[in-house]
Image (cartoon, rainbow over all chains, first blue to last red; front, side, top):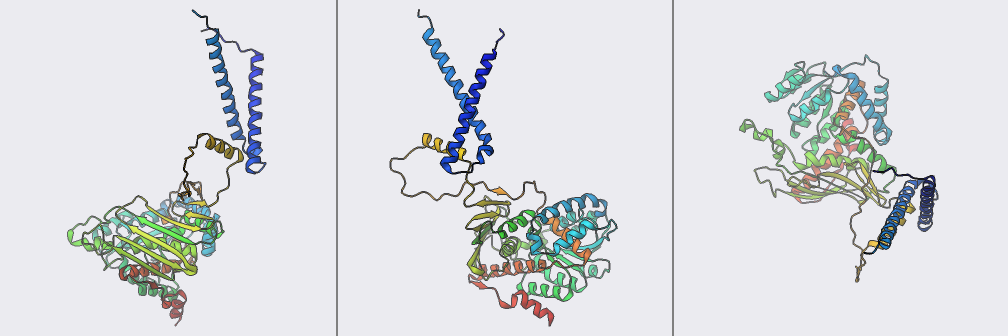
Amino acid sequence: MKDTVITARQKINELRIVLICYALANLFNVWGILRFHTPWKELFTAQLWVLAVTGFLYALVWIARIIWWIVRYILKRPRS
Amino acid sequence: MSRDLPESGRREFLKTFSLMAGGTALLSTFPSMAKLYASSVNKSPSQPVVRLGVIGTGSRGQYLMQMLQNVPDTEIVAVCDDFKPHLDQAVALTGGKASPYSDYRRLLERKDVEGVIIAVPLHLHAAIAIDAMKAGKHVFSEKSMAKTTDECASMLKVHYQTGKILQIGHQRVFDIRFVRGVQWIRDGHIGPVTQIRAWWHRNNDWRREVIPPSTERRTNWRLYREYSCGLMTELASHHLQVANWVLDAHPVSVTGTGSINYWKDGREVFDNVAVIYTYPGGVQFIYDSVISNKKYGLEVQVMGPLGTVEMEAGKYFLENPPPAPGIVQLINSIEKDLFEVVPVGGPSWVPENPSEDKGTYFINKILYSDGSDMQLVAFAEAVRQNKIVPGLAEQGYLAGVATLLGDEATLTGKTIYWPSELEVEAIKKTAEI
């Protein structure tokens, strides 16, 4: 098995994606607070849920990537 | 005997008692409990030992004796039973230290016995308790109080006349789940109590092994009218005490029914009963008991417009629980929109299904005590201090009378009203004459 190299650029890129997911999850939390008229303290007290949504969004990003890789592989496959 | 392990027992007692004192229901209902607790905490190591006698050493009597072994600074110095095998077992339980008696009157003659634990069949409670109090002994008697309402009244009267402690074995008064439950209700969390529903279901014939056959009636005394009122006195009395405690009142009237519909084995008491008690203000206490199905076990549900308390489970349920965080509601809403099946012709009404709320426990602690040990601790402490806990004898009395009126209702099919001569104040007056 060969060594895999994750570059600094890739790491920063992944971190950016996670932070965007986290920001979106917080916006989702704000939407919930506004829609259901719950207390603003939930911006802090519901952080466990926010983290769970962050994980869910990041998982969606990976699913999208995997689908893209598969499609790209099929399209670039040399035709016999 | 309990001198062998006073410190561990004492620590457990103080821990449990302080948990109970955390809720003030017990202390507000029985203010002297606070004094008992305070003196127990502050007592000196050289506290005098309370010397007790146990009258009736069958299964319940021996169970209480085992509990007493964990009560600090108590000693069982005498045991009494007219059934020799039980008497021998009881003496053995004390390591041979207790003196055996076959006649309880001889035991009562002993000057060193300060209090007695009575665990005999129901029909004997009154005579022994009255003799004991008249002999200057403090009395702890198993529930239910007595076999007839007249006997209950006589016991309470002698308690007032002699000034001796009379405690009936309703251990739920000393069960932290019930103490916290009563506190919760009195704090108004469920609003005014509008109904109490209780049941006690078992699935067995309620028989004990009979050796030799000639002892059938005395061994299985719970099944015969001469000695017992069956499910009402043996089980319902506990939950009636709780209802009285919660509502701080006794029932005004009771109606009910009962029958033998499964255990047709020669027993004389009902194997199923259903009674409805009406309390002041029109609050109903609905109770039933069967011994042919145990799916629902036992429970006391106290209901009000804002919530429900399940006393046996030690849980409360709010009618309108606080809403979930907005983000959770949003997730649920999206999930519902995506996955819920929308019927073409929807129902014209929403089914009134039971709430799926799992409830909240009053205490986050594993309980090893149902109050049986604490009631003996409290009794021993009251004897040591020679102090009556105000209201405790009356709890036993009111539960005992309510139980017997319910039994009368099941037998006659009539609505039975609480007689004025059985009011506590009326008994007090007759005691003063």
